[in-house]
Length: 430
Image 1: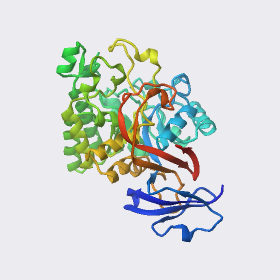
Image 2: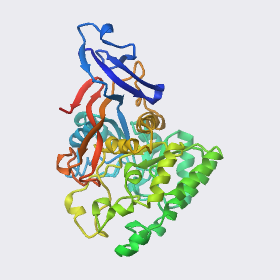
Image 3: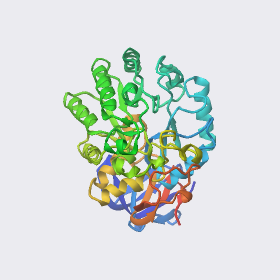
């Protein structure tokens, strides 16, 4: 690869407390050789490929901790090629892929398959997760040690929750001994049974079964109580309510070590957006009240929430164009994760530095991967975006194979211009 330099950029890298106009030098191996305000045209030889960023914002490549790929078994919804295209268009260079494929990723042969297929087909960094329990049925834990040795980054039953407390205690005890990452979806099935949306006046008006925020809170409380006895690497995939935040705050103040994620949907939308049965907004966890949404944003500012995820769940149109109670849950989001997060910068809910922090270095620390930073010697995974560029989300223009976006026709301000992976320019919005 030819050496290159990106000049005249506003570099924002929370891992180095950096926010300055400068440049980046990328060596022939795709690694960062120099960075900062001292990097300018006078420092670069004529042999370098020079890219003028025109004072646009340059950040580390985004890490999305919750993405459904579709391979194997659901290639008609998404595959490594289409996921890569969508991710790169959104400045996302690394994803944690979920194990709810067909068959489920819960054994060594499936891990070998997913890693090999990702290496051959994906154009982004794929960090695969495996299921917490066999067949994701919440009963028997998978072989954490064996699967980790094969390349698994963490363990999750995705949108299912281990209901049995004894099973969960065994999982956390074993995870504590091995140092593996447990990623839990927090939902008590008995309290959320047959639920479709947030349990509120809106659910009553629409005649839909509601999902109480207590269903989430109870699992958060249970697992954090277990964590006191079995101090493993524990991550709550997504929270959606202020009640859960109260529990998180109390346990953080006690000194308990764990991490928390939130979906971009739950901090950008609320239950009112569902309108008259918009099934593309049927999500898990559900969209909740405006008060919950604001509380979650405050939770990010107060460092109670560590990461924002897209919760990218592609679904074919047939599974969404159904009565609300029968429609599938989930929405695509990997391509719109950063632009939608920037909406929170423009309305002064979050600082730019905080947004980039929860999308880059924080997930890298949780996953223990050498990503999310532009420090010297790092792989040059880079996103360049125009923070002010207006555009309108049109499903048919998005790169994902499925088109079930929750934000169709939404006006956004902020667009990815270029995405580099290991120094190679893989996306260029012209």
